[in-house]
Image (cartoon, rainbow, N blue to C red; front, side, top):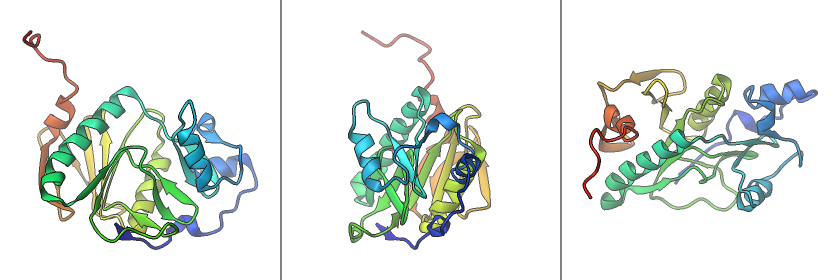
Length: 220
Protein backbone atom coordinates (compact mmCIF):
# COMPACT_ATOMS: atom_id res chain seq x y z
CA UNK A 1 0.00 0.00 0.00
CA UNK A 2 1.29 3.42 -0.89
CA UNK A 3 2.04 5.82 1.97
CA UNK A 4 0.32 9.16 1.57
CA UNK A 5 0.78 12.64 2.84
CA UNK A 6 -2.04 14.61 4.34
CA UNK A 7 -4.29 16.08 1.67
CA UNK A 8 -6.07 19.43 1.55
CA UNK A 9 -8.71 18.23 3.99
CA UNK A 10 -6.05 18.13 6.74
CA UNK A 11 -6.38 21.91 7.05
CA UNK A 12 -8.85 23.18 9.64
CA UNK A 13 -12.08 24.01 7.76
CA UNK A 14 -14.15 27.08 8.55
CA UNK A 15 -17.65 25.88 9.42
CA UNK A 16 -20.09 28.41 10.82
CA UNK A 17 -23.41 27.47 9.18
CA UNK A 18 -25.16 24.47 7.69
CA UNK A 19 -24.45 25.98 4.27
CA UNK A 20 -20.74 25.83 5.12
CA UNK A 21 -21.06 22.14 5.92
CA UNK A 22 -22.89 21.41 2.67
CA UNK A 23 -20.27 23.30 0.70
CA UNK A 24 -17.47 21.58 2.59
CA UNK A 25 -18.59 18.11 1.57
CA UNK A 26 -19.36 19.03 -2.04
CA UNK A 27 -22.96 20.28 -2.16
CA UNK A 28 -24.37 16.81 -1.51
CA UNK A 29 -28.10 16.49 -0.68
CA UNK A 30 -28.91 17.19 2.94
CA UNK A 31 -30.31 13.71 3.54
CA UNK A 32 -26.85 12.26 2.89
CA UNK A 33 -25.26 14.32 5.68
CA UNK A 34 -25.42 12.54 9.03
CA UNK A 35 -25.26 15.19 11.73
CA UNK A 36 -25.12 12.96 14.80
CA UNK A 37 -22.49 12.56 16.03
CA UNK A 38 -20.57 15.70 15.16
CA UNK A 39 -17.67 15.81 14.96
CA UNK A 40 -17.59 12.19 13.84
CA UNK A 41 -14.63 9.83 13.95
CA UNK A 42 -13.44 6.74 12.10
CA UNK A 43 -15.06 4.63 14.81
CA UNK A 44 -18.44 6.07 13.75
CA UNK A 45 -17.77 5.03 10.15
CA UNK A 46 -17.10 1.47 11.35
CA UNK A 47 -20.11 1.47 13.70
CA UNK A 48 -22.55 2.53 10.98
CA UNK A 49 -20.99 0.11 8.49
CA UNK A 50 -21.56 -2.77 10.92
CA UNK A 51 -25.07 -1.67 11.94
CA UNK A 52 -28.35 -3.10 10.76
CA UNK A 53 -29.37 -1.67 8.39
CA UNK A 54 -25.84 -1.09 7.13
CA UNK A 55 -24.93 2.48 6.23
CA UNK A 56 -21.77 3.10 4.25
CA UNK A 57 -20.39 6.54 5.13
CA UNK A 58 -17.33 8.57 4.31
CA UNK A 59 -15.69 10.86 6.84
CA UNK A 60 -14.96 14.41 5.66
CA UNK A 61 -13.50 16.82 8.21
CA UNK A 62 -15.59 15.39 11.04
CA UNK A 63 -18.77 15.09 8.92
CA UNK A 64 -20.31 11.75 8.01
CA UNK A 65 -21.52 11.64 4.40
CA UNK A 66 -23.57 8.64 3.36
CA UNK A 67 -22.30 6.92 0.24
CA UNK A 68 -24.92 6.58 -2.48
CA UNK A 69 -25.28 3.34 -4.40
CA UNK A 70 -27.83 2.24 -6.93
CA UNK A 71 -28.55 -1.12 -8.50
CA UNK A 72 -26.89 -0.30 -11.83
CA UNK A 73 -23.85 1.23 -10.11
CA UNK A 74 -23.48 -1.78 -7.81
CA UNK A 75 -23.67 -4.24 -10.70
CA UNK A 76 -21.03 -2.32 -12.65
CA UNK A 77 -18.77 -2.20 -9.59
CA UNK A 78 -19.10 -5.96 -9.15
CA UNK A 79 -18.31 -6.61 -12.81
CA UNK A 80 -15.30 -4.29 -12.77
CA UNK A 81 -14.00 -5.95 -9.59
CA UNK A 82 -14.29 -9.32 -11.38
CA UNK A 83 -12.42 -8.03 -14.45
CA UNK A 84 -9.66 -6.54 -12.31
CA UNK A 85 -9.32 -9.63 -10.13
CA UNK A 86 -9.11 -11.88 -13.20
CA UNK A 87 -6.07 -9.83 -14.23
CA UNK A 88 -4.52 -9.04 -10.85
CA UNK A 89 -4.80 -12.32 -8.93
CA UNK A 90 -2.81 -14.61 -11.30
CA UNK A 91 -0.04 -11.99 -11.39
CA UNK A 92 -0.16 -11.30 -7.64
CA UNK A 93 0.01 -7.57 -8.32
CA UNK A 94 -2.04 -6.54 -5.29
CA UNK A 95 -5.61 -6.50 -4.03
CA UNK A 96 -8.86 -5.16 -5.47
CA UNK A 97 -11.26 -3.45 -3.07
CA UNK A 98 -15.05 -3.32 -3.00
CA UNK A 99 -17.18 -0.25 -2.16
CA UNK A 100 -16.93 -0.83 1.60
CA UNK A 101 -13.11 -0.79 1.64
CA UNK A 102 -12.30 2.44 3.49
CA UNK A 103 -9.18 4.41 2.55
CA UNK A 104 -7.66 6.87 5.02
CA UNK A 105 -6.41 9.56 2.64
CA UNK A 106 -5.46 11.96 5.44
CA UNK A 107 -6.20 12.44 9.13
CA UNK A 108 -9.98 12.88 9.42
CA UNK A 109 -10.56 11.92 5.78
CA UNK A 110 -11.90 8.45 4.92
CA UNK A 111 -13.10 7.69 1.42
CA UNK A 112 -14.80 4.58 0.05
CA UNK A 113 -14.08 4.36 -3.68
CA UNK A 114 -16.51 2.13 -5.55
CA UNK A 115 -13.58 0.02 -6.72
CA UNK A 116 -9.92 0.28 -5.77
CA UNK A 117 -6.61 -1.40 -6.46
CA UNK A 118 -3.66 -1.38 -4.06
CA UNK A 119 -0.28 -2.87 -4.92
CA UNK A 120 1.32 -5.37 -2.58
CA UNK A 121 3.72 -3.53 -0.29
CA UNK A 122 4.34 -3.11 3.41
CA UNK A 123 0.93 -2.37 4.97
CA UNK A 124 0.59 0.97 6.74
CA UNK A 125 0.50 1.25 10.49
CA UNK A 126 -3.01 1.55 11.98
CA UNK A 127 -2.73 5.34 12.20
CA UNK A 128 -1.08 5.91 8.82
CA UNK A 129 -2.70 7.54 5.83
CA UNK A 130 -2.70 5.62 2.58
CA UNK A 131 -4.29 5.80 -0.83
CA UNK A 132 -5.21 3.28 -3.50
CA UNK A 133 -3.03 3.17 -6.59
CA UNK A 134 -6.26 3.10 -8.62
CA UNK A 135 -9.53 4.64 -7.43
CA UNK A 136 -12.78 4.19 -9.33
CA UNK A 137 -15.91 6.27 -8.77
CA UNK A 138 -19.11 5.09 -10.47
CA UNK A 139 -21.45 8.05 -10.77
CA UNK A 140 -24.90 7.98 -9.26
CA UNK A 141 -27.67 10.45 -9.98
CA UNK A 142 -27.24 11.72 -6.40
CA UNK A 143 -23.54 12.48 -6.74
CA UNK A 144 -22.66 16.12 -7.37
CA UNK A 145 -19.94 17.49 -9.59
CA UNK A 146 -18.29 19.27 -6.65
CA UNK A 147 -18.33 16.09 -4.59
CA UNK A 148 -16.59 14.08 -7.31
CA UNK A 149 -14.15 16.91 -8.06
CA UNK A 150 -13.16 17.05 -4.40
CA UNK A 151 -12.75 13.28 -4.19
CA UNK A 152 -10.58 13.18 -7.30
CA UNK A 153 -8.25 15.88 -5.97
CA UNK A 154 -8.05 14.17 -2.58
CA UNK A 155 -7.06 10.88 -4.17
CA UNK A 156 -4.19 12.44 -6.09
CA UNK A 157 -3.07 14.56 -3.13
CA UNK A 158 -2.87 11.36 -1.08
CA UNK A 159 -0.76 9.49 -3.65
CA UNK A 160 -3.24 7.80 -6.02
CA UNK A 161 -1.81 7.54 -9.52
CA UNK A 162 -4.90 6.68 -11.57
CA UNK A 163 -8.58 7.60 -11.22
CA UNK A 164 -11.45 6.31 -13.34
CA UNK A 165 -14.77 8.16 -13.25
CA UNK A 166 -17.41 5.83 -14.70
CA UNK A 167 -20.66 7.35 -15.95
CA UNK A 168 -23.27 4.58 -16.39
CA UNK A 169 -25.82 6.86 -18.07
CA UNK A 170 -23.46 8.31 -20.69
CA UNK A 171 -21.54 5.00 -20.86
CA UNK A 172 -18.21 6.79 -20.67
CA UNK A 173 -15.09 6.51 -18.53
CA UNK A 174 -13.01 9.59 -17.71
CA UNK A 175 -9.41 8.52 -17.10
CA UNK A 176 -7.31 10.83 -14.91
CA UNK A 177 -3.57 10.53 -14.37
CA UNK A 178 -3.46 13.90 -12.59
CA UNK A 179 -6.12 15.96 -10.82
CA UNK A 180 -7.01 18.25 -13.72
CA UNK A 181 -6.72 16.53 -17.08
CA UNK A 182 -8.48 13.48 -18.38
CA UNK A 183 -9.16 11.35 -21.42
CA UNK A 184 -12.82 10.54 -22.06
CA UNK A 185 -13.38 7.00 -23.31
CA UNK A 186 -16.51 5.85 -25.10
CA UNK A 187 -17.76 2.45 -26.28
CA UNK A 188 -15.36 2.67 -29.22
CA UNK A 189 -12.34 2.78 -26.87
CA UNK A 190 -10.47 0.41 -24.59
CA UNK A 191 -9.82 1.06 -20.92
CA UNK A 192 -6.24 0.25 -19.89
CA UNK A 193 -4.35 0.13 -16.62
CA UNK A 194 -1.57 2.45 -17.76
CA UNK A 195 1.52 2.39 -15.54
CA UNK A 196 -0.54 1.22 -12.55
CA UNK A 197 -1.77 -2.04 -14.09
CA UNK A 198 0.38 -2.55 -17.19
CA UNK A 199 -1.24 -4.99 -19.58
CA UNK A 200 -4.79 -4.61 -18.29
CA UNK A 201 -7.27 -3.98 -21.09
CA UNK A 202 -11.06 -3.83 -21.02
CA UNK A 203 -13.14 -2.58 -23.95
CA UNK A 204 -15.53 0.07 -22.67
CA UNK A 205 -18.29 -1.61 -24.65
CA UNK A 206 -17.66 -4.81 -22.65
CA UNK A 207 -17.78 -2.91 -19.37
CA UNK A 208 -21.24 -1.51 -20.00
CA UNK A 209 -22.39 -4.43 -22.14
CA UNK A 210 -22.42 -6.57 -19.00
CA UNK A 211 -25.75 -4.95 -18.16
CA UNK A 212 -27.35 -5.66 -21.54
CA UNK A 213 -29.88 -8.49 -21.55
CA UNK A 214 -29.11 -11.42 -23.88
CA UNK A 215 -30.70 -11.29 -27.32
CA UNK A 216 -31.79 -14.91 -26.96
CA UNK A 217 -32.89 -16.84 -23.89
CA UNK A 218 -30.09 -18.81 -22.20
CA UNK A 219 -30.01 -22.57 -22.86
CA UNK A 220 -31.76 -24.79 -20.32
